Image 1 (spheres, rainbow, N blue to C red):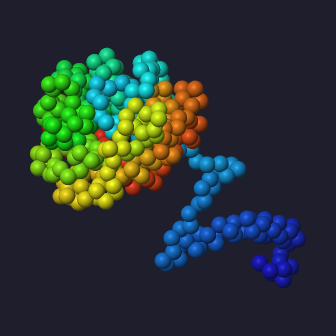
Image 2: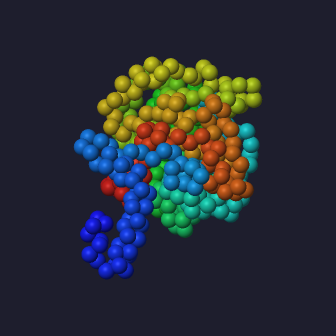
Image 3: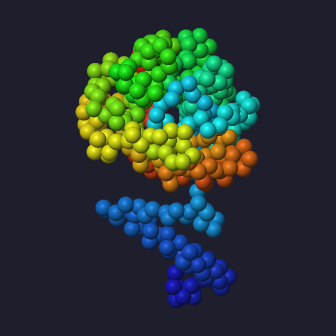
Amino acid sequence: MHLAEMRGLPQALAMLLRVVQAQLSALWLCLAPFSCRLRGALLPGRSPPLLEEGAGEPGGAEVPTVPISVNYHFTRQCNYRCGFCFHTAKTSFVLPLEEAKRGLAMLKEAGMEKINFSGGEPFLQERGEFVGKLVQFCKQELKLPSVSIVSNGSMIRERWFRRYGEYLDILAVSCDSFDEEVNVLIGRGQGNKNHIENLQRLRKWCEDYAVAFKLNSVINRFNVDEDMNEQVKALNPVRWKVFQCLLIEGENTGEDALREAEKFIISNEDFEQFLDRHREVSCLVPESNQKMRDSYLILDEYMRFLNCRNGRKEPSKSILDVGVEHAIKFSGFDEKMFLNRGGKYVWSKADMKLEW
């Protein structure tokens, strides 16, 4: 309403309108920048503008990383001696069960949806009872959507499945070759035990006890030319993780390392050729060195996040001492790489629609 129109109104009403008009003008000045953004976002062919990192937080603070999927290597001890191992037996420490549970509850509170227990060999501690109790705790009490284990499979017995199988979503078993001589050469063997025969037995138990079966293979100089199509298709895992052999300073290379993995290393071209040879295996999930270094949230035996970006494992402080939000800042975790490598998938057996 213009001034000329206001003259015909009672003085009190005209004054009130001036006050309202002034307030609306001030409000418009505050909202103008946002209206420009919104108008630009709604134009045909234009994408909404992205907020800059830290926008919306007081002082431009970074948004905390959510530990959606965590790999907890609660032990470094192992009964195998794989020559390329990049998480070696540098300590024999294992947290007391209740302390491990406390840390897992902290991770759940911070947003964890999936926990993977690894090692070392997880079934060495108390002959599988320790990891079994953690699996049951995470599924029954924390009610995590996904609980999984990575194991070489050599120490798993059927009685473990009878007791803990209902709480486990995925069992991943490591097998690098379907030639037993190659497995022994790599170091994935124990006396007279046949690794491949045991793999077949575990696959059957997974089916019997409603646990999704996953296969992990590290591609290296001794198996890079192998054709595994027939055997993998026969096993029919929900996922076949295919890793490029990786060097980690202080673990499998360097002066203070317990392994010398240089002789196992393959080129990127060799790795791509292996993947191309197995392109018809629909469940294959490849992981190059770059993806492995940056895209995992790894907790060690002290519940410290391990940053592998610089080619060695640099630990944070323990989440038990400083909390998840502070410790995870030093994890080196690349969430975009995590998503690009397919880190988020259907990981709860209740959603997999498998025929048990």
